[in-house]
Length: 118
Length: 118
DNA sequence: CCATGAACACGCTGTTCATCG
DNA sequence: CGATGAACAGCGTGTTCATGG
Image (cartoon, rainbow over all chains, first blue to last red):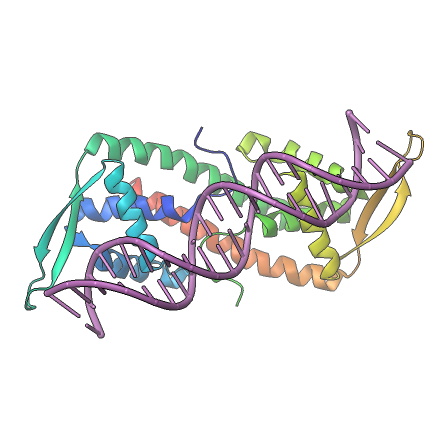
């Protein structure tokens, strides 16, 4: 049922990367945004903070991530919410689904390039 | 200025193919849809008639296509609107812009595949 | 100013409705 | 029913606003 429309939605793309980052390192909302921006700015793509938060909330709701409040190091008492993996099986399943979607998108793009720029 | 957001929009993708089809053969609205569906159904993508019409109208407004009414062969007197290229220079420019966009999208997708499925 | 959200608004796209041979 | 549109509605996403440290 997944692949209904045209190309992958931004939300799904972000979620895939958030899972990856969360697996590697404990991060919080704006840090995720910072890392994403660093990765994708050169591709002409800059997600917004709202989109990142909404993606994180979805991953919480779907039981893939969990969160805990912490005090930011170095500062007085700025509270931040750090995320980490909650259910690796769900994560793996999600990755599997996204792989299918990404492959499909790649095929579409490649086909368009081939058909229109021979 | 083109590349502002995430991936290519469906409308632009359709327009690119409509130009290609219109260059090869005189077609009308629902025929374009039929050909598109034939090409992309196996990719899990089926555009709607409304989207095709809107794309055609945009190409008219932008001076890339022109249209003329004809009577459909074989039938009594069903009127159809066939399209053909109007300004090839504009078409070439549009293709050039889309090439840039498609390349960018391909890079994004490939990066995601590489980063998340090593 | 940083961090986290929610609220709001806009744009793209799909579904439905309307008209005409 | 085929063909062409317009009108309407939903959803994804960006911009703004709100709250707290």
